Image (cartoon, helix red, strand yellow):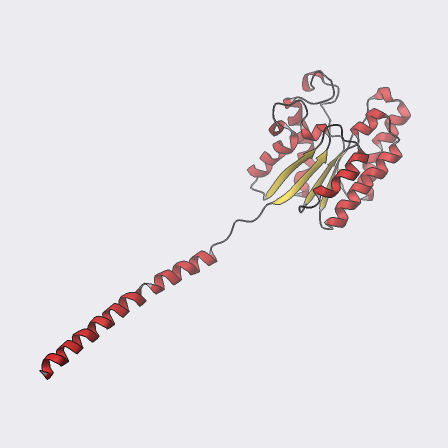
Length: 228
């Protein structure tokens, strides 16, 4: 009887030890998997490039905003493998005064690079260049206050010669002066090689076609890529 009892207890002990080994044997694989998952590199979050402007930025008259130069620049950024996201904050009809009021709510999200394209509507309305300069400077100051490390790009603009020689020169001077004062990268003239070319502008003669926007993207990218 004792032999039977001993044999039963021995078998029971062997069974329990075997079951215990099977349970603990799964743990190293699970722990190793968890460790690998924790050590796997996470994709870097993209930084924002805010394009703040008027109808030229918004792409007025185009079939899609994807044809506007901010979206075209996004394509260049993606092709280069850079971790930036372009945000099109263009608003048709926007003046420098309107932009000064509108910029605040756009600064709720972080901005790594700020591209300022405003002033054209001021020029067409004959607003005093000093007032335009003051408004643009105030916009830049708000951006710098919110994000001191933000890099700044300014799109230069000109008015038609029909506005008068003095006004033409005073308006044109706004942009290099502001860029120098605020340490901004200057795109000398956003509409270079597009303004005045009927084949690259829509029927209004002011807003670029899809082909014209490609040139705008080139004009901006030639300066922006150095910032990136």
